Amino acid sequence: MLALAVVLLAAAAAVLVLLFQGVALLFAYQMPRLDPLGPGGPGTASVSVIVAARDEEGDLEAALDGLLAQDIGGLEIVVVEGGSRDRTRAIVLARAPRVRLVDEPPLPDGWVGKNWACWTGARSSHGDWLLFLDADVRLHPTAIRTVLAWAQGERAAAATIAPRVEMVGFWERLVLPFYIQMVLTYFRAPRVNRDGARAAMLNGQFWLTRREEYEAVGGHAAVRGVVLEDVALARRFRAAGRPLRVAWAPALATTRMYRDRGEMFEGLLKNIHDTRFSAGRQLGFLAGLIALYWLPLLVVPVGVLLASAPLLAIGVVLAVALLGKHVAWARAVGAPAAYGLLYPIAVGYYVVLVTASLGRGLRGGSVLWKGRAYRLDPPAAP
Image (cartoon, rainbow, N blue to C red; front, side, top):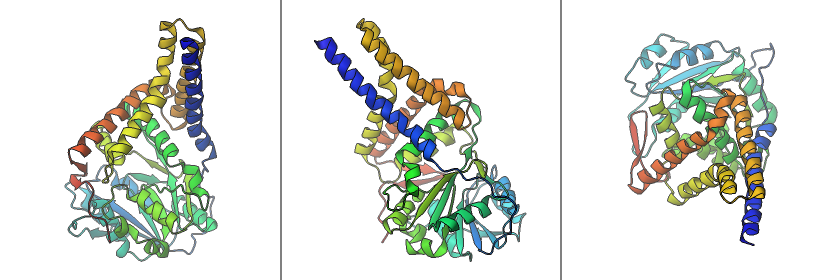
């Protein structure tokens, strides 16, 4: 009787696990794809590109050259330089006057550096549209014209794209496919395109908005102390009833998110942790990782241990489904397919990240990024 109960429980859990795993595949299938427009006129809308740059010499040249090659008229390029300790400033000045350098004023209390730089750049620019672009994003020559036309056609208050993520070396190829999957699933990305839906997200690497819409929701000043400012702003757009649009656009933009293992760990930890720490949320995330990605793989050895053919069969189905899904996923996002077989190690990486976040939060630590530390739970913006 006990053995039957165990098998039934395992079968029910397997169904839930498989349904959850299928959600990521469903969302990937539903995600709209944006491809470069063909030759066309430069358009009449004026666009100001805001790039927040602090210690970005490794990426900024390619990003700026991609902007200077855009086939759109009326483009204003503003780089807000945040006290870099490398050649960032010289790279910008070498492209003047087509690229304008703005020195970031001293960081006020309660502000995250990127938010302050974006707000400073927006206030010193003049375009009807604002494009917030990370310094590590390289653009196809038609990228801005394509996204602008799409946003205008959709009557979107803000439009964002997911670029192709360039992965170099073992750890990036192991961890980043799982990260992309988590983002797609957590934010229910395709549902962002449904007006009236609760889902809300913007990708801080590349998002375009009408200036009047940006100002209407308070801009970066309204989320000044939030590390995940793109998500917070998306929720403000959504709460105000403003349409959001998101698309996958690997042919329009490419990024290498992190340059080494240390930067990747701190960057992903920052995203998991944010500045508003919640032990309950982190514990729930940790439990979900273990229950949905690790425990299903233990059903096979448990079936062997108990000499249970039904349990063994359930375990084999789960293992094949999970490993097959992650192999296909790794290949789809640009990593070698074999890395999908190592997905349990990627999950372990995330378990370490969440555990580190828990420890840092319970000790009252800070979020660290670009040489700056941000205390947890900063004062709310007025």
